[in-house]
Length: 121
Image 1 (cartoon, helix red, strand yellow):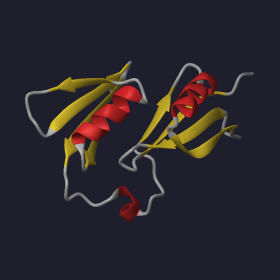
Image 2: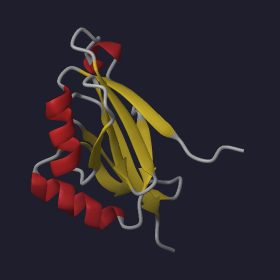
Image 3: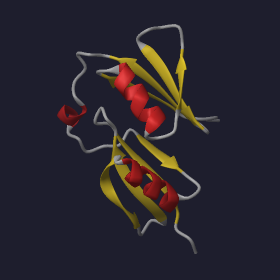
């Protein structure tokens, strides 16, 4: 049985990434006693970010995939909140034929995250 999912990402500037996840997305940033790592936590989402200054840029991987799809209670409210903060949107908010209302963002490091909620019946 899978109890939860955790994500691990490489970022070129850990402090900049921590500020983005905290200030723009509302995550809590946890220090872990290792200067090269931070944990970003919000509700049931846990992201481990490691500073890798020489990591391949996300765009060099084809820039076509999302590292996370996060189900949220109110995707419309979250979209309005993140838009007001100036978060870069890469997929517009819309209801999809598969029953999800969703949108996508790009983080300060180029990682892409989708947010969605079931379409109201």
